[in-house]
Length: 278
Image 1 (cartoon, rainbow, N blue to C red):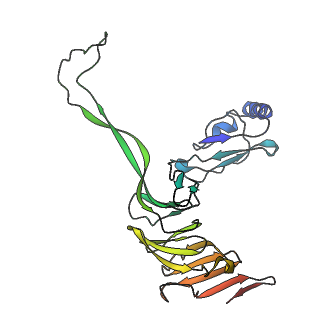
Image 2: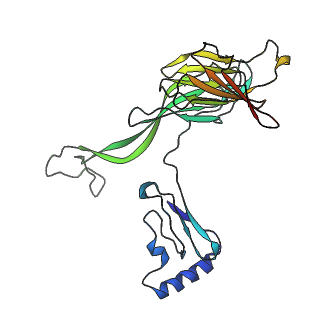
Image 3: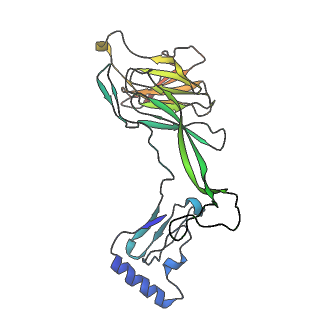
């Protein structure tokens, strides 16, 4: 955790000296454990979030200056690499368009990430690396092996915990256009992915098969009037999903009605004078 200061450090330091002269300690000494110590005199209120292990706090100083505590990321990993589609002569960037958490089933975390063409399922877990200690062969003063008085059995010593990300599945070759949305379902088994003209339904356990549930592609591209911009599952009803278009409409689909949900159950559009629902 770092405390990032802004303003004139010289004036803050003088104020800290004045505060310390009038009492037993400065205001910086009374900061909670979630703050790192600085030479800045803070005289305002400090408001930690109640958990020193994941603290997000801010403290105010005189003159309207504020020192704010900032989070550091727990771990990072490379999800996608730049690729090249030789069939279409198209370069696929590694840029991540969206990420979505999956339903948690154990101590590990599962998430979906997607670029323009490929969706990946990741497992993020905490592991402790173990190292071997108490070797029998030790180095002497001249680089050789030192004599041992007794034979020792090597042992494994656990190291510091580390967050490890491992790819579980790769879902690809299902979208002809750029993927703009992914959404995990509340049933914990399926998720949807949407591009400009289609929405596909996937099972997390099967990366080779997907079902098309929305297709708005016209017979000819000259007749194209809108594209899909976003799609999302209902947070609790696994059969309901919603998607938006470039024309400002939001459509609700029910997978119980039919396999292909081109005929939406409800459509809401933002009109000039109000909001209409069809």
